[in-house]
Amino acid sequence: MATFRELLITTESQLEAADLYFGHGYFDAHDEAVALVLAAEGLDPLTGSEILDCEMSDTGQQKLRGFLRQRVSDRRPTAYIIGYAALGALTFSCDKRALVPRSPLMSVIHEGYSPWFSQAVPERIVDVCCGGGSLGLLAAYHSPASTVFLLDIDKGALALAETNRRGQELPNARCLRADLLATLAPDSVDIILANPPYVDAEDMSNLPQEFHHEPRIALAAGDDGLDLVHELLRQAAHVLTSHGVLFLEVGNSAPALAKSYPNIAFTWLELYNGGHGVCAVSASELKHSNDLTDSGPSQV
Ligand SMILES: C[S@@+](CC[C@H](N)C(=O)[O-])C[C@H]1O[C@@H](n2cnc3c(N)ncnc32)[C@H](O)[C@@H]1O
Image (cartoon, rainbow, N blue to C red; front, side):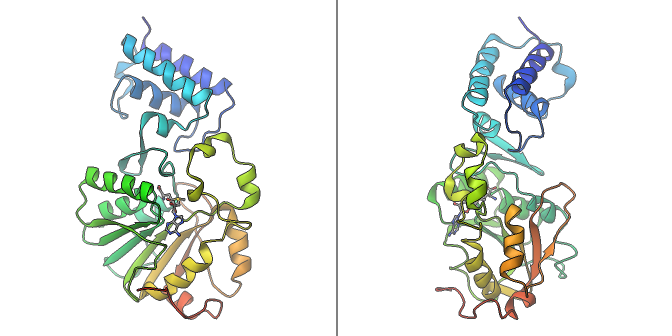
């Protein structure tokens, strides 16, 4: 028999020794060891140190060995192994249909879009490229008076987002299949949260193995990582209300974005929870930009 303390120590050292990539919702080997051990025993992820000197069940230990094989040999992200992931205040079902939730845009939601959005409550918020729905559902949770649309082109990702929406019981959120913002009416959205695929070709060819378990459609975005962003900016200019704001995450593709649109004032954000390549841009900045064509989305 072994205690949770002993199993945590051995799990952490096996993870440490395996030269893994830690960036899918966990900081380090210790963090992942805690998640794997608790999940193997079927315990709440917030269980505290009171269990450390209790014995782990045989079934739990057997399950843990299977989890470790998947993490170490297959390089599968922990969130896919245990089937859930936390972002901010919420926990989401998580599987290979969508990325493991980890977007730094979470901090923007927590801060109530301040100081970028000047109205009291956004009437309509859109999470475009919503994947499993983490950002849109967090937005709906923190702004119960807002209507939140979660949009994705991929049926699998959207089905996961819908499962998460039902699980969170957020009646102010709706999941819709859409190509970017093409189905939205002009001047109808106060806040756009955009976490599109933005990994450029060079980064795609150097990704740690963990990322290859995630859907390619959620990551790859052409040579400079901006394949979807050009159309997204054009559509955002059209659908945002005059006081609206687009919050856009482009990660390492930030320099390419700034270079493509030298006349648009993107404000690059310092986020309290870390992360980089996230900007805010106002509707008026987009609507008055000569860098964006004025024809709007193909359908509204
Ligand atoms: C970076 S992931 C989003 C991750 C999401 N924030 C989450 O927590 O799961 C990008 C998403 O964009 C979606 N996507 C790709 N092309 C799209 C398009 N043309 N229109 C809408 N969604 C698209 C992918 O299916 C993927 O789910």
